[in-house]
Amino acid sequence: MLTLFSTLISFLSGGLPRLLDFFQDKSDKKHELQMAQLQIERELQLKKAGLEVQERIEAIELRGIETQAAVEERNALYNHDIEIGRGASRWVINLRSSVRPVITYGMFMLFAFVEIFGFYYATHSNVDFMVALQTLWNKETQIIWASIVSFWFGTQAFKK
Image 1 (cartoon, rainbow, N blue to C red):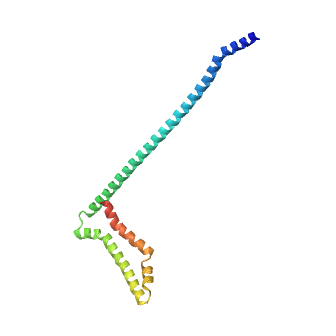
Image 2: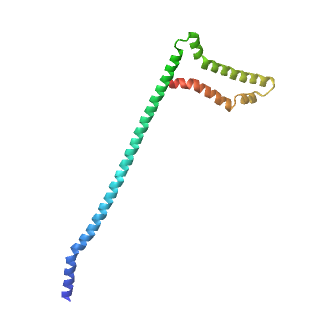
Image 3: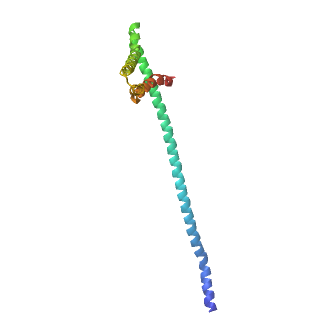
């Protein structure tokens, strides 16, 4: 019995290092696989971050190109206006430059006339002041007024 037992222990002790090496190797391979997966994930994140940075850089460059194109277009328009005015009389140049302001003044006078005449008519027709005011100065009228003021004065502020 002791011989059988010692033989079994000898057999197991001879195979024990191999058995321990098997489990150690399995554990090492699992660890290496986890490390490789972490490295791949890190590289993907870096590539993604690099692509995002590259996209941002390209977007900034595109905005710069668009701004430059807008500046060049405005300069081309100014040069075109100057070329058209060459050789023209001062009267024609002044007339050309007064078109937009004349239209603006005309529209403003028409707007003021409609509003003032509407208020005059309402007061002489015995319409309550608040009803007349709400009818004449409603949301649509306020939007039109704000648009006109924003267009003329807002664009001048942005040009500077």
